[in-house]
Image (cartoon, rainbow, N blue to C red; front, side):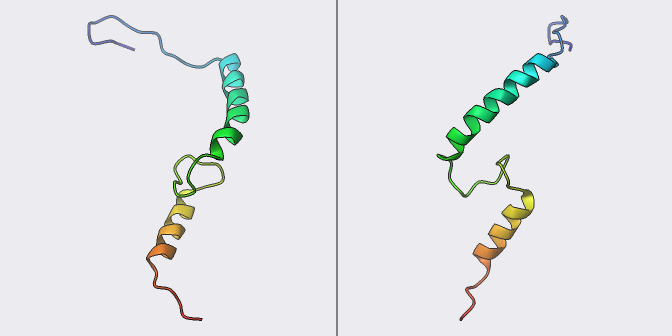
Amino acid sequence: MPKGDGRERPLGIPTVHDRVVQEALRMVLEPIYEEDFSDDPFGFRLNRSTHDAITSVYQRLSPAQPS
């Protein structure tokens, strides 16, 4: 990758070892910090999608239906 001063920097492609370590850390840390997160955000969250976000907004903006 070219730098602004004309030199080049190596491309940082993770090796298999790096990916294994990253995934192991994610598996350990995700349950810990997921408990502390608010239920409102949907970006990059476990079992949440863009469609879930749209559904949530639609439900919040729709008038309450009488029973």
